[in-house]
Image (tube, rainbow, N blue to C red):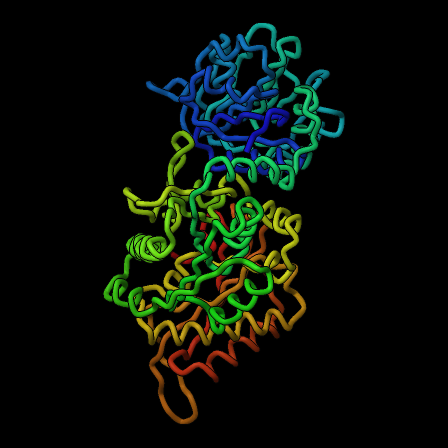
Length: 512
């Protein structure tokens, strides 16, 4: 997505759970950033012409054998560098400082105390709350560095302004660090960033890239009905028009009335859409399968089979367009250093190793809120742009256990009640995602004068901006009571409803 005039921040990933938040924070401040593996060569890093480099945190100790590092030649490039947590320790040790193991791991809120004048930390930072997550610490800074702040007896900020090298033991990218955004903004200013990047700015470069890549070939687009695939399809349509055929598959795993509603919406937009009914095939493939990763891979493979079959109906089709987003990539494939794979998304980790079609993923480096901004810039209606996220595998991963047509029917009706009540309660803008989950357990209940032994449904409702982190929504008790009463009273097969109060992390938004 980079262009000749694009100013770029390079983030070297050392495996921190917060690395993606650095990207989020930088983009919110108008600075385009990319994440590269810590193993990247100096030539590869500098090929992006970065105005600044960030060394992320990570779970390792710098003095371990084979600890993740960087090529010291990177320091000779005269590009400002900010080391965060592990990145600070690595910077310090590489330049001759001393890093030691602490007797106790420091995790959570701490108070920053200014020690000396700083070009990175302003006066508001003194006494502010910062977020710590470390075991080791820098006990002696390298020659030429000043200690600018401490937390207790721990050095938590150092800098060599002449060399434009900076280190922070805390995580400024985390919301708990109250002055974190201002500190990052100071670093970006020192680097010379204009701060004028936005999601809309990729439009022209992506359209040019798509036209050059596709040439006179045809493409098919995997439409799910969600905002991601809708924006991807519209962007590609803007680039190559009728060379794209959008395939909307009825997997049998969609929400109530979704197939008809989505087709009507796409007709209004003017996309070239071909609907495909394939529910029986997906049900057959999923029969007897309970493992969530296997479900995702089966669905991903079957999607590709459908797309391959549909591609044959259009001559010269060589590409498949997908609405893959950056969080999908991060959670599916360990591409950025030693980051941990959380789950396979059907359109990333769930794809077969050998595909007949080449992928075009124009949104691959964007977060959900950025995709919404892009959708608005493309002129898509709010009904699509503000549509709540819905996973590609659909209701299959909201049924814990085997997916059957009967289970889908029960969940679909319960989910419709949840969505109807929340939409009608005028709280929609305050929540990110809301749905029902069908659990593989039964409980005893009493209905009328009889004993029941039926399934349990969970309601999940979270607030978020990009899906990387999320907090459970504090719904009004009367709303929860209404949803529970309606589900138990109207959905045969469910006699108990529970509410999920797990945040992400430690949980994920979806149950599978």
